[in-house]
Length: 259
View 1 (cartoon, rainbow, N blue to C red):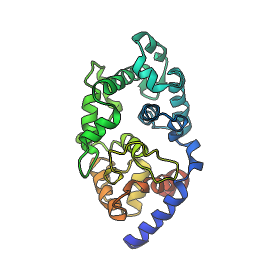
View 2 (cartoon, helix red, strand yellow; view 1 turned 180 degrees about the vertical axis):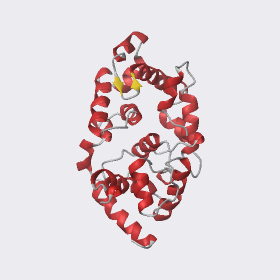
View 3 (cartoon, rainbow, N blue to C red; view 1 turned 135 degrees about the vertical axis):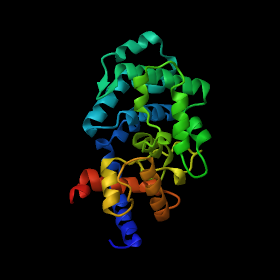
View 4 (cartoon, rainbow, N blue to C red; view 1 turned 30 degrees about the vertical axis):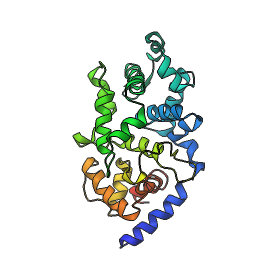
């Protein structure tokens, strides 16, 4: 793999292997796949993406617990809940994401649907011709307009503060991409897949460096921008499809560990 063309061909092969429905059950995306109504997919996908760090089986288990506490009608619960209904979340915990955090997230989601036109509208309104990163920044500002404990803000990262915003970029991939493979949902038609950014974490960052896709050592917003440039050169219309390749190489093949 000494040339860009060879690397692209290698990644295309891995995309074809891992962008398959058979991997859904072991991935957090399996949680929103349990729903059919757009808003249920949006809400369940968002809450699942927010807690998507750590072991995947624990992520899925805790995301399903959230859905169960919401009566498996996440959008309806968000829109119709009363404060007393939120008490059931007091005992919830996923790593540093607490029941108090979850209660705020539900209130904030209601505010976005009631006053800002919903999740898609916010991200679409603030996306630029070339990027969704400004939209993530603006979404975060809107999301935390209600009174909130300071600690809850750590659960939505900000690209404007140099964060790679891995989980939100992953969520946007879920909502926007639609290649008829049956994995990503393609529910948000108002945002082009061409402006999405690849979710960047320790594994995908290490793999990207090993393949010579990026040089930056930190997994931050600058590294995301560097990776964006390369992947958009490989496929201008659908650059984040390569997330499947980077994920498969890291999580399945352990390529970043010498595989």
